[in-house]
Image (cartoon, rainbow, N blue to C red):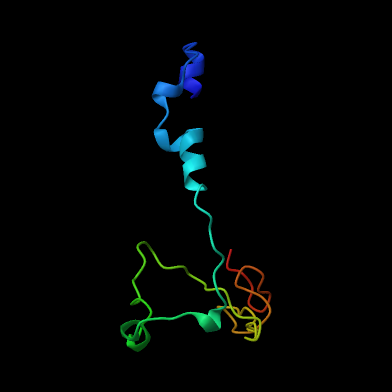
Length: 104
């Protein structure tokens, strides 16, 4: 429609499908629609009632897997502190280690 307006075409009806015209909309709702009965009053065939519907099989998603998954609120967060690679003490790393002097 935007292209037709840019080209200054006034009669857009030949370019529009019949499904989008007013007559088609009026014909759609010409037949009165009855509301659905209560769910307890529904009648389903026996073949449908006996059929067991299973969930779809798991499909591996493409791409690299995420490094960390989102944890549930009931899972405890990790309380592990960082550990120094030089002296083995917790709370600092090699860059900030003051236990051994640096060899300069």
